[in-house]
Length: 289
Image 1 (cartoon, rainbow, N blue to C red):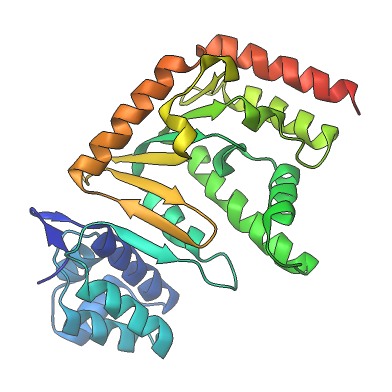
Image 2: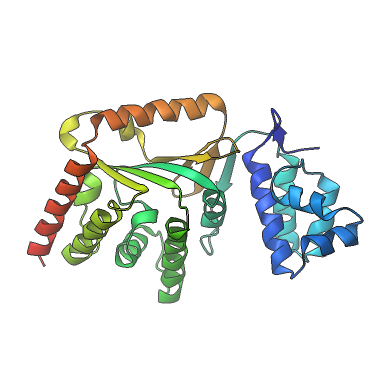
């Protein structure tokens, strides 16, 4: 049996479990129908898909065959099963559609709280469409067709559905002041983005704070990160760069980022003063349009 560490599912096993559920639904089968074909109970299939049951390589392989999964994707999933007991997960980004966001979206979907620090731009969960487009177009390594850009923008904005759930997670965003001042897409785009930030910060479960440049050095200078909290599963830390995404789950790593988060918060302006600063910068951008 694989995918358990200390009696709790690892991030790899959680990812495989979510993918099995997605593939079953894509195939138009119920958990009961799958269980009947395998000669097991519906409960077992549900527990596998919810990460409550360790993953057996042979069982997962059988399910992937039943769901008619392509060979390359099948080997990728089985590779995760083989390594499911190993803590942490690094995902190398592909050259096609932004499939690296699929794992993030699925793992965000069951969170109860997100603590996101960003030093250079507004995080994806709070981006406007125009701002997201300007960021994507400005940071890609090759020219994309308009349709490809549209797909990436839609994928990024798709994450934001998380905040429209009946009971969304608590989202706490801390921005380094330069993130508010980078001229992304021109003054009009920046002004609209900053106004959107102010509006989002008024939601009950959203908190936005700013670390001013004058605050001096702090752990956030080392780069962006997001701490992901769950009701019953262990927390994760999400990191991302140009070529890979990383999910950390080992206790010392989680504790290190929790301490970094607290030190960053100690340098941040209170939420009300942060909103005032963001509004001031929005007015300045509007004056430039």
